[in-house]
Length: 509
Image 1 (tube, helix red, strand yellow):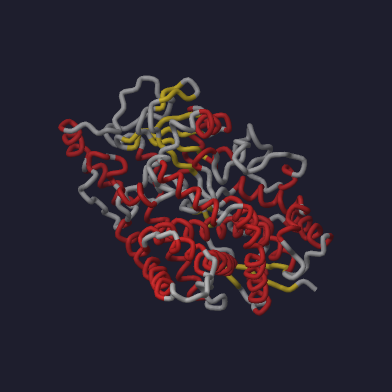
Image 2: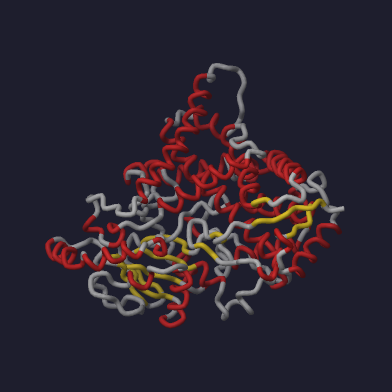
């Protein structure tokens, strides 16, 4: 569960919006002459990068789909540390394990800042007070929130206490899929309901979606996806900070994000209200909400924490499992090997698998790692420079945005043999892991900004994938050939399949 939001969404520019950039350069240029933007940098030793257009810089390179692929190709020309200028905003991109190590370890203190996209419908002052993901720096307040998350939700003790709950929700998912045998299901929506209900029970001690209510699952998944997409879409002020405060949102993304947030807050606020009104009852739930209330947290503080735990947690987990199933369906040999491993360990139904079995399943672990290598939850890991520093002999200026290109590292032919192929075997005799120490594989980040939800995600992804493959055989609708399965990506937060994965479950005999 990667709880970090991603790089601003260049691909979401409409062509008319891009034309607007071309019509405004003169006025922007005049504004810049009057008032210098704080993001303008005169450093002479920036990393190399592609040539820039006057005023708008490198924005024209990113008006099409899949900017992560475009940037990865540019890195092969300009090197593992590259600079771009989008409007007046300087962007530094690291696209190799060595560059990632420099950014996330060697210079972690200098480069651990974060700059929230202007479309985020939350005041900057509130982000500083309440946010773990988008706090501008690692302040004492930020550290206290991180300790809270890790201690109450994601510590070893908490995870051990939650094991039965996670297994129960997965068993309910298997039971539901058994009732849908022979029917087409959107696997992403089914998994979403199971994950969201698991998180709902951790926070509220109750399910938040009826597993059989397909419309509700689809609607809430869309709300989460839409919020994450719109809240990370760039506005003009992201590229021209001098225009910040004018409220320029021609695409209406900030308004859409605010609408989604309002819907989520409405449901969660009611649950908080009910719990506060029953506070005198002797019954304690022992969940995250109880802890927050007992420690005097205000409703607004609780809501902002839920906003970062629930959408990001459910969204990234679902995307990873959907990608894993798609790769296994498309790569029959890998599917057969995983099935054989599960059968050897007698994991053939939801009652026969426990989280303690996961460490005994090396091929399952390899399949998860290979999925995260090919399809990281986010394409770019976002940071910002809190002070000027030198990285790989180049200057990284203060206030520049600094991104680690996870997608480029995972598809680098100098790091991985046959990098675009799904080959779990590459991890069977390898000590590489994604816990922040191996910079070839960083789906959850590294350093002080590393995703605190990694331990939960690690257990949940393995558990769900094991029961999906161990309990069911799967086929595509209309007996389509798995080799023809569409594997195109949609650049968004999270990085997801462009077309939802439709599958037909058949209980194993």
